[in-house]
Length: 152
Image (cartoon, rainbow, N blue to C red; front, side, top):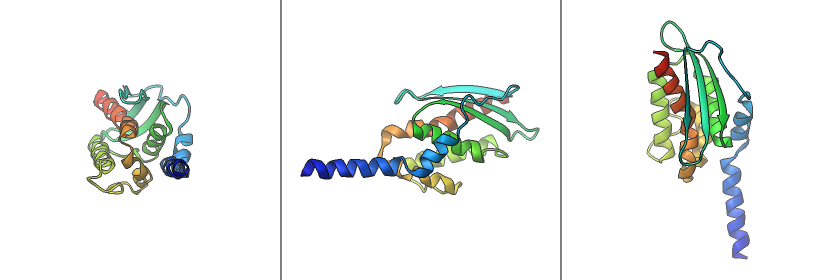
């Protein structure tokens, strides 16, 4: 009977971790998305889980994100994070993206709120109990920040 209870708890935790919002965001990421004349491109790989995210970015004359594309070989959480970032990054500066990345890392570690800057980040709250998943969630931010650095 204990095995059933722990099995049910594990299933509930997994269902919370892979919520409809997470799965919707993961599915929203176009396969093979690219920007032909990107100002910057970068690929990051997580040594923790093996997920890989490639980012292309075009920047406006003021240095803010004009267009963004991701290619992901990642778990649903990494893809969802990239999907969300793709939705909300346009018009943001490198500093804003870095701040959100740092706030998200703090929230995942339990030292900050998930919705400090972008309320949509709250969908990642169940992942705070799964430290092995944090790197995949932060990976799109790291790839985008690298691409923005290359863009100048």
